[in-house]
Picture 1 (tube, rainbow over the protein chains, first blue to last red):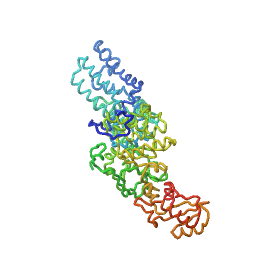
Picture 2: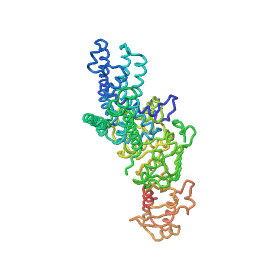
Picture 3: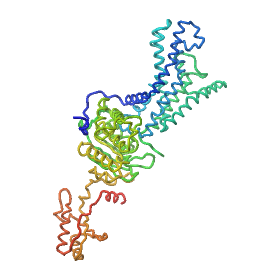
Length: 284
Length: 331
């Protein structure tokens, strides 16, 4: 019987497998923004530095070490070089996450969407997990994927590149780093998103957090106030990441101190999310 | 307690269908919103009536397990909502009063998304989304962005998302809010069809008494968080004491005296005389399903004929649910 003549019918299970709720939320969170062409363009643009670095690695083969004069990081295929590359992607991380992450909870709160979500058989972990996975996916699109592509490219063309390093250890390091830092950054961004109902306000706070603290950190560095560099939000992730990549510290403070700060941010974000995400608004 | 694996539509697999609430007390902050509420419901069309702030929406949220239950016990479809709310929600549909439309999605995408979140496989969810959107009358609008929907369309969309996973119970919070008269009638027809013909349990929370009269067979009345009354919608027809409007001329004193001997009470109402008869005194009025008002009319006609009191008007005064409701709330 055609659907328009059927009226209301009871659902008969088809036997197909249902996706877990966190996956459904994450899939929707990734697919919906990617329908905007300009966002797709931003993803493509974020790959330009990787293409440039790939060009430098290739050029080093042809022109020798002369290209190292332009900056060792661009031609390095050591793990540290890839950490520096991901650090250099922070502009794209900032923009991409501001666009895709700011409204993830704020718009749900504005439209009373939380009430809809929590009328379904899902819990807080599913909801936050799905939203964080959305952010980690976009984070990986501009950091992990270009790095992995570069690793494969380096393995194919650089004579000193080994399979163990370029196809296993370095991509694994990058994967762990992106998973941990992406989750932590995602939770912090979600915490901001849960505190408002308008994406634009979340973006403003995100800008203050990323750009504002980086500026303060840079000024502190210029003034020789090393401890003040601890306020640099994204800088802490890169500095703590040097532990994983076996690289020198990126800031003038201990990587372990940065790691402690990152853990602190993450715990604070989880606490905020636990407090803010509920299906019912309680106004005191 | 370990939560059981989620399985959609478990209640049709032989589990209980009803709702049991006992001693439910709930407070958002310090002042209790619900105070020692207890009731048991079997599937059907239930109206939840009460003035603003009486705790109707909070009660629905407790039934959905959206708020932590501190005192009292709530069991829905056989699941204890304090510990197993997630599992129970697979069999519940919720239509919120405010918002409930996720921006940036088309109608069909939103409904399918909600279906998947309810545990339906992706393909089934999309198929069901098309079906329920046809059912609620949004077939032609299903690919439009739901942000562009009118208020009436949004209400239908919210009903569709509540139906997509084929729940056992539908909790509807002010479903006709903001609708024009035609839209209101139309959505009430859908709800009535679901409750009376499709076998879904419906709890309709509203302060519009006409909505309850149109759809429900039973009402729960809340006031200040307390369950004030529970009765069937046709309770007033089952009451022994019924009021008749009488207007006539002739020997009124004798007419009144005779009726008074039959236990009648009188009250003037403009040109009318309101006669209250206790039908339980007349065996011919007593029926298994209630009291037959025709017997009361016959008694008055008989007395009027005997006393030559010419009647211009005689009818049983209809007791509306609204009057009952206001009488209970204002008592």
